[in-house]
Amino acid sequence: SAVLSILGSDEKKQISMPGGIVCTLSGGRLSFCFGADVNTKRVLPDGIYPLAEGITRLPGGFEVVIGVMPDDSFKNINIIYKVSTKAHLYADRIKGALYARPRRPGDRILQGGMHKSLKKLYCDKKIPEELRAALPVICDGDGVLWVPFVGARDGAAARDGTAGMTVAVRLAEDTKTYGYPEDNIK
Image (cartoon, rainbow, N blue to C red; front, side):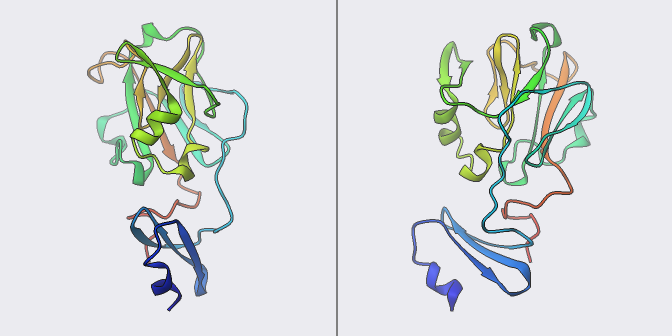
């Protein structure tokens, strides 16, 4: 009866159920997740996280993988609900060292010859609010280079995987999921 009571609502609602199951209604989608904590929101703490070739785990549950990867190493590429994405970038267009950091107020990226607000791009790409504070922004000496699920700065994205380096962001396997379809559904 508690689940039925939230069905008519337009706002996001969550109900804790027996056995550690959480029922969430968000954006017209009803999901059941096992082991999610209703009161916990993932956040990438403010700071600068240097990136090197290989896997770098970030606080908040994500990891950044840099290097040459086979195309089948991430089966769910650019699918926000599965929380993994990758991009091929020209290595010679990266200025200085790569680092990750959280999105900050006023962040902008050059796309299509125009500087665009990350806040607006997150809304346009329908990135869930629960992910926005946890997703890392990949930067170099010139500023924002690549934003997962949004895209790369003009001139940085390689057209194929052979032209540069691969940068991937994925939800680390040992963390709880966000309760989207296909993630721990019971």
